[in-house]
Amino acid sequence: MVVGCSVRPTWPGRKLHTASQTIPKDGIMNANAKPILVIGGGIAGITAAVEAAEVGYRVVLVEKEAYLGGRVMRTYRYFPKMCPPTCGFEINVRRIRQNPRIVIHTLSTVEQISGTAGNFKATIKKRPRYVTGRSSLDDSVTEKLESERPNDFNFGMDTTKALYYPHDMAYPPLHVLDREALSEADEELLKKISPPEALDFGMEEEEIDIAVGAVVVATGWQPYDATKLDHLGFGKCRNVLTNVMMERLAARSGPTGGEIVRPSDGKVAENVAFVQCAGSRDENHLPYCSAVCCMASLKQARYLREKNESAKATVFYIDIRTVGRLEKFYFDMLEDSNISFVKGKVAEISENPETRDLILGVEDTLSGDRLNQTFDMVVLATGIVPNTAEAKLPIELTYDDYGFIDGTTNIDGVYAAGCAKRPCDVSRTTKDSTAAALKAIQCLNRGE
Ligand SMILES: Cc1cc2nc3c(=O)[nH]c(=O)nc-3n(C[C@H](O)[C@H](O)[C@H](O)COP(=O)(O)OP(=O)(O)OC[C@H]3O[C@@H](n4cnc5c(N)ncnc54)[C@H](O)[C@@H]3O)c2cc1C
Image (cartoon, rainbow, N blue to C red):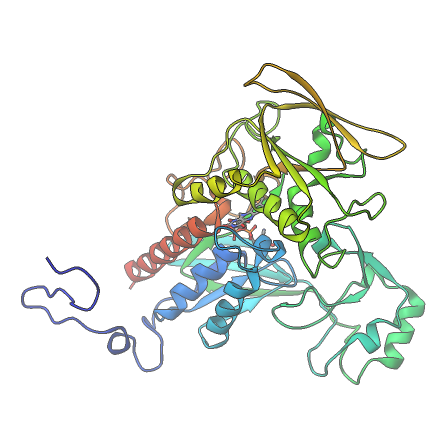
């Protein structure tokens, strides 16, 4: 038996073509096929877009934020390899830039979709950026402004100026102007100091109608609202954070320049508790497992240990779920004597009003002991909620009880990918999105 990819099998009587022979010279695989509409520019949407475009299909990608990359861009590093998210993103940006078949609309949503497989019509609504890209803007302009806005990229842990750059790897690499946050005085100032034609205050919302043949829904997820977990103190105790906030705290581009410090007093966090299943696997909140939170907390405990060798982490868990090859990551963490694991669901978190330290009440289910342990910071492993739980798409789709798009019973020509379908990690998301791209291509070719 021959193993490996150097020897290609041949079918009797059939000549195999290489990819470059098969894709026509103009780069369009099927000139009659309409483009594929991809909704969402996270890792799922980007993957579906580049995979389809690289085999010769046209793609229109619509992203509601001012940047691409979705939630992964807001992590410090991503497991299992612990690379910064910019690594994979740079490669994808190169693939997008090299591919004329991909059209991207950021700050945009899809307002309407009608039609059937092979023949949909969609209306895209594009919010004004007020930044033209015709001349460049930099800090010498933005730092003169007084108007600020909460930095939603950093979960409101810091602020940006009203004219801001979404993040280091923003795509397209342009500033955005938040008109609502801009004072009249700053508007006048900007008119005077910004380079000619850099800003267009008259820019208006646009509606763009397009014809598409298939749709990939890659609208992803948002974190479970931790203020609903009354017993865990989020929003009341300053040093209780969520896992997504911890990602930004550890990131160099985050609110503290990458130092893991307590929000209450800026002291370096020395003794941190990670509370698993904060909302997940709980009938009163999210009855399902969010699939990535155990790995996310293990990864974050590693951030803590790498940044401060005396720091201690304690993980409170129901079960540790690190499937397949990811288990090695967990086993490696067990070797670290500064990381402890306690099996038990945290019942309550309270705060010492003087020190702002946090007291966790929990029953250790292995020993049967009732514990009251003190920590200087707590990270809640809040779960994954599909964006479609609240914001349904303008097309008849089947959703499960939690708002995830049902992958099997949906309408022909519309394919969901990534966390729009279920909680999953990047590796599974990319495989899923490649499959969705293939389904979309098959749909286009059926319409030939
Ligand atoms: C704390 C935490 C840490 C994690 N760390 C890791 C890790 O280290 N490694 C790993 O493999 N996985 C990790 N994950 C999981 C990872 O975040 C997901 O696998 C990934 O985000 C899924 O990508 P996605 O594109 O499906 O969704 P998203 O990343 O949510 O992207 C969806 C995109 O769609 C856009 N969008 C939403 N609605 C619309 C709309 N109506 N119109 C237009 N655009 C829209 C959003 O703005 C967003 O850009 C982590 C998860 C958590 C909770």
